[in-house]
Length: 138
Image (tube, rainbow, N blue to C red):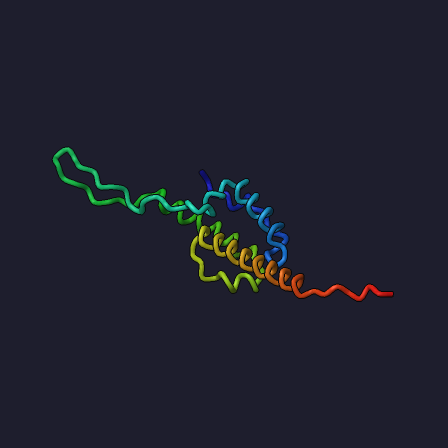
């Protein structure tokens, strides 16, 4: 399968603290449409780096050979990683810039969004709990 990076559209709306759902829908559908969605799954893992040694007819084992599928997988994973990085605003990028695989970056973005959502929920709960009803006498 040829690399599908050319099929990925430029992300017009980069990820901020407030537009995760729109960003997610855009980026996830672009990756799936380019047949690169598997690289962001929790189960994403490269194939073996080397092919198993083979026993020759005379009984000797060959040395392990580099697996071309591994090299292809790594290259495509880095394309997806680069695409994801390019879809982030600097404020988000700075928090996840150390990630080295598409799967790890995707997970970090989801965790970042989840922690921001939890913080908003807690803030709303506190505001509701401390809110007082205005004076209705009149």
